[in-house]
Length: 187
Image (tube, rainbow, N blue to C red; front, side, top):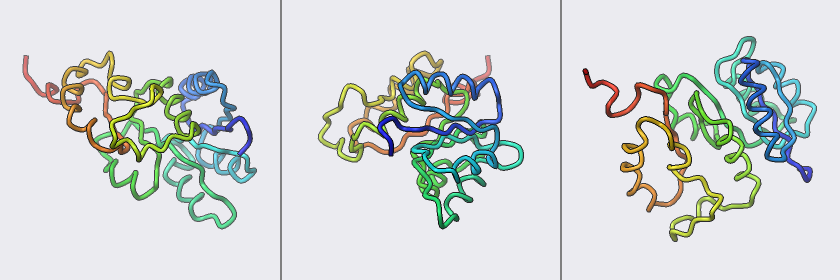
């Protein structure tokens, strides 16, 4: 890996691709983009990519197909990967993260700033598995960081007190409106 990590963002939505590019680059990371999984695979074949962020649903080649092509390639090693998706409830995210060894699955809409912070954490040398002592570094993401401003923030905050005392594990949050304990209450 070079001194400045090179991030490949594979996203078919041109506006979201530019927003993620701009935001992740603002953290001092080099960013390249591709508009679909096939173009992402072609760029990965050239080498020099340290981290992959890919959308799930794209034309030509999906994010999962891209991940599978990289995993099946004898000449390529897939870098740490984040999968972005708008199909929150349709996926078994825990199983998918385990099966594909993903850093995270981010459900749209999400904060590109949080994406940048999550990527930076991967290069900061933290051993996230050693959080059982309760010591937290100031740059570790906390549940509050991910949910602040969300309508269900209070519910999410109160539901995490026990979980935060446990060893760190990948976290999957679905912050779409209409999801959560109060989503089905009739007015």
